[in-house]
Length: 101
View 1 (cartoon, rainbow, N blue to C red):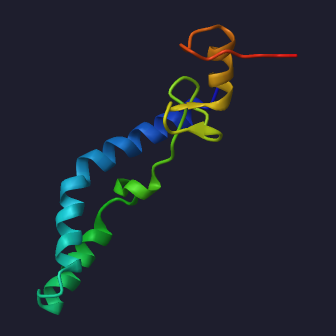
View 2 (view 1 turned 135 degrees about the vertical axis):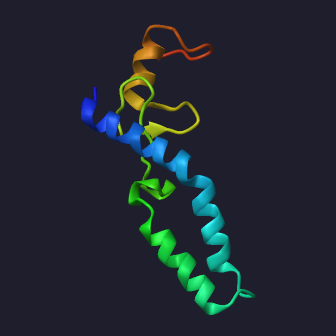
């Protein structure tokens, strides 16, 4: 199980990303538009820099839905390898047979 503080910090980041997504996208559109005047693009980049750093989607980290583990994460299943092994052993994943010999 991951530290509760890290899980909560990640939830806070997700909320910030969601909150600022539209504003961030609009500013990025202005910055990347070559037809706009240079001053306007520069002002937009300064506004973009003033947004909270944790509102950037790049700062999100994938975590296991069950345990919060940040490493060995399967994107398709949204769980870690350890959680996958436990669920497979208990027969909770349809079609998955854990063999040992």
